[in-house]
Amino acid sequence: MGFFDKLKSAITRTTSALSHEIQRIVTRSPRLTGTSLNELESALLGADLGLPVTQQIIAAVRIAFESQGKTGLDVFEIAAREVERSLSTVDSALIRRTDGPTVVSLVGINGTGKTTTSAKLAHLIKGQGGIAVLAACDTFRAAAIEQLKLWGQRLDIPVIAGAYQADPAAVAHDAITAALSRNATYLFVDTAGRLHTKHNLMQELAKVHRVMDRRLPGAPHEVLLVLDGSSGQNAINQAREFNKICKLTGLVITKLDGTSKGGVVVAIQRELGIPVKFIGVGEQPDDLQPFNARDFANALFEIRA
Image (cartoon, rainbow, N blue to C red; front, side, top):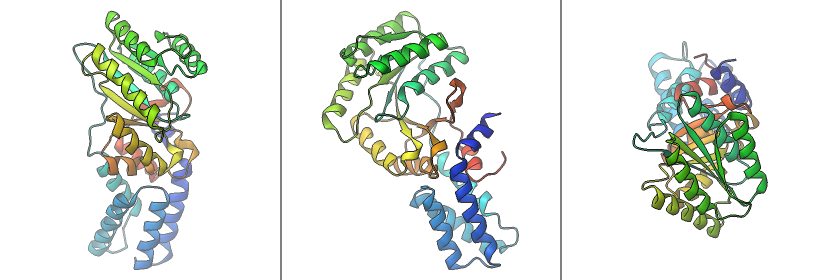
């Protein structure tokens, strides 16, 4: 199964509900009425696409109807085009330094899949011919350290770790030293999960990043917020608060297979201007891939790429 098919399968709960509603609305009447447009707006908002993009789609549908009538009007194509346009406004490529390791810090609340995502990103870089190193900076959970070590053994990627409850900033410092000595292409730093509402924990994260910067000026070069796609609009609040403490450079969306509100990917990027850089569609190492706006938009509205 190709990645596009995996993506379609992963967001099937969103696409099924959304497609059913759109189909019902557009086939019920030979005319596109104010009531139809209101129902279409509700369906799009129900998928958590957010008000700005929803209004953008509604405006495009109205213009198309006024110019060509309902005959030949393809709401799915119009919606996919507008979503792709919205998602393509920012660069989603992972930063790559040429004069040393690119340090990528993965942040987020508990349970979003940061540890697994760190390992999958390292695997992706290794598959591209790069040299990846992992840093186990979630020292508050012994299980997180062991989990990352197991991933490292499985994927043959070195893991820099300290003892349980060690200072995460010290582990990050040592990991950068190790990445430099190994001529690593990327260092992926798995940080502890923390609620965005806990001020002391957020300040601790800021300290870890300051220590990285002292060891390697400019580090971390990427700060990726890992979000559980099923968290819906709450994901926007998480992104907003994390962005205040550590300037986010990108998003990784996981667990989209468990929600009917996969449109939140669009809403977050549109509202905060933070690009979605990777999307996870399963448990295997290869099931995390760079985000492609066209593929996502087409999958969302069940259009074959």
